[in-house]
Amino acid sequence: MNAKKIFVINGPNLDMLGVREPQIYGAATLADANKIAEQAAGECGYAVECMQFNGEGEIVDALHTAYRQAAAVVLNAGAYTHYSYAIADAVKMLSCPVIELHISNVFAREEFRSRSVLSPYVSAVICGAGVFGYRLAVLAAAEKLSHA
Image (cartoon, rainbow, N blue to C red; front, side, top):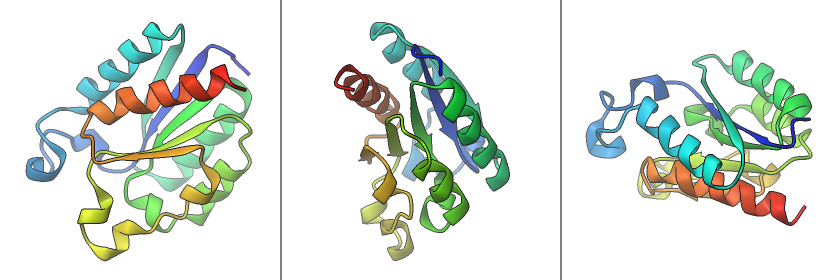
């Protein structure tokens, strides 16, 4: 495990931030979100590795890599949050802090978005703060690590 690296794993459609439903997700891009995460991590003495995958299996693979290389994980699994038991199982095996992140307030949207199959296995959930949530999630991960 790399004690000084936080993985930021983004799921499907997050590569389309700034284009996809800006009334919900805002005008910021994934590059903007990654920059926010990198700045927050640097302030806490951590490196960050940002990645984005549209495929469920790729996210599972990234979580397996995190098991060996990351001190903590920030996970925005997108729509997979609500039904991917494969991703939930991969999160469940991690012993490091995992912060579940949502850009929008999932509780103010469609009913299916208010259920997460990941939440029972994560250290914290952040939602509804826009891309600023990336800063909050990295800071939360660093805080959890400081008490580990």
